[in-house]
Amino acid sequence: MSVELRTNWVALNTIVYREVRRFLRIWPQTLLPPAITMVLYFVIFGNLIGRQIGDMGGFTYMEYIVPGLIMMSVITNSYGNVVSSFFGSKFQRSIEELMVSPVSPHTILVGYVLGGVLRGLAVGVIVTILSLFFTHLQVHHLGVTVVVVLLTATIFSLLGFVNAVFARNFDDISIIPTFVLTPLTYLGGVFYSITLLPPFWQTVSLANPVLHMVNSFRYGILGVSDISIGTAITFMLVATALLYVLCIRLLVSGRGMRA
Image (cartoon, rainbow, N blue to C red; front, top):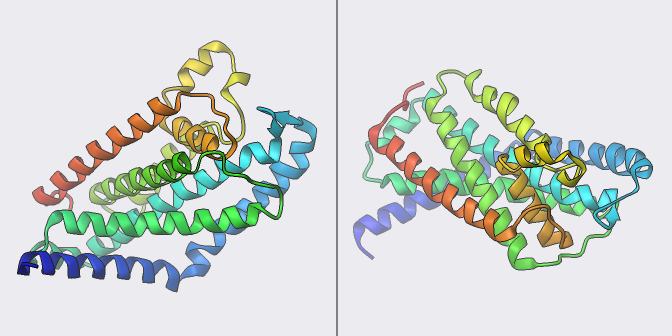
């Protein structure tokens, strides 16, 4: 192994280790709150409201919303981990030292993204385990389930990185999650099937990228979906590639690297 490869390998391991240790060290703030929130969703929407709604898509309402809630936790935590961590590095000026080091921009980006993906998956596993206390889950298509959850976590980790680059203060890192991410998630088919909507709003809903992610994951778990799985996965692959290129260009240009 060349010196350059060894340097980047050590740097990648260091960044990922730091990111994982960061969210594990403060687990009462990173892992516990989403678990409690999802339990409340299971109790209120699944048990209490779900009994009045009845079946949806051939499944109980609780079974129907569980995949969406798992995906919602993966999305918010993947995004939140990268945007807070990278902006924290900007704020403390530690990212400047990393930028002038002999470490490839690809290594820096992949390290932060892996940290976000691992936190998203960790919370997703916790929520999945908790959901088993409320309903029974049986994976319909393991391959689709794994591919979709990994691509979704990666996409929102990359989006979190973009947000962190352009953020100028701590208020800026909460604007996108509050005014963009939350509405897209709640309108992304987590709690309902778009077949319940009028034709016009069904068409409008198809423009929501979260809808494709949630329904693809629901297909992997339950075997039902409101959209084409092939189209959804193709969209996610293209989005991942485009966002990766954008993030690399931002890193190379050094734009927004100072808070």
